[in-house]
Image 1: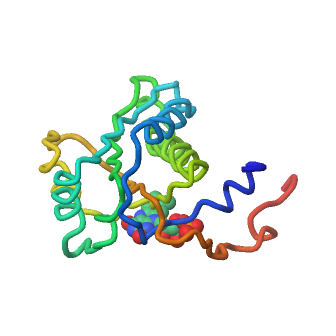
Image 2: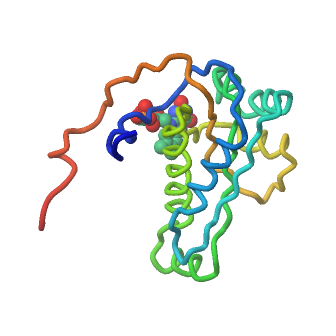
Length: 179
Ligand SMILES: Cc1cc2nc3c(=O)[nH]c(=O)nc-3n(C[C@H](O)[C@H](O)[C@H](O)COP(=O)(O)O)c2cc1C
């Protein structure tokens, strides 16, 4: 990969996986990229549960993506990454109350995007997923009811290497200098 913008352009949501397995070394590189992400008060409010066992993965997909959250394509991902959101440090929770800003969600967003960009650099496809059955996920993984799973990321090799043109607002609509 020549430069960062090239990598950013390469990353896109993958919804057609080949079914090929991923080696754990590559998955751990993605975790390392996420681990190094910045976070409010350095609270690092994330944990990644990486489900690569085929039987458990299928069970998880059935629980996560049944109606009204229907999606069958994640089953062909090599792994499903379940991102467990933690509540953050005391200081970041105080900040949350005072500013009415959920810093932990910003933190999770940065860490997950680090994970995803590292995956893209390794030639792996990913898709952010916020639409899934959270209760079902917690049940399959034996997570306490009080835990929070905001995002799931299927990771795998894409069926095709072709990239789509990005659908985005024009750059002029997204910034202003000095006002
Ligand atoms: C927080 C978040 C939640 C998302 N949830 C889903 C989802 O549940 N299912 C899905 O297919 N795509 C989901 N997406 C992917 C977006 O649809 C996608 O990023 C957007 O359309 C831009 O396309 P691109 O990722 O290919 O550039 C989500 C993306 C984000 C950032």
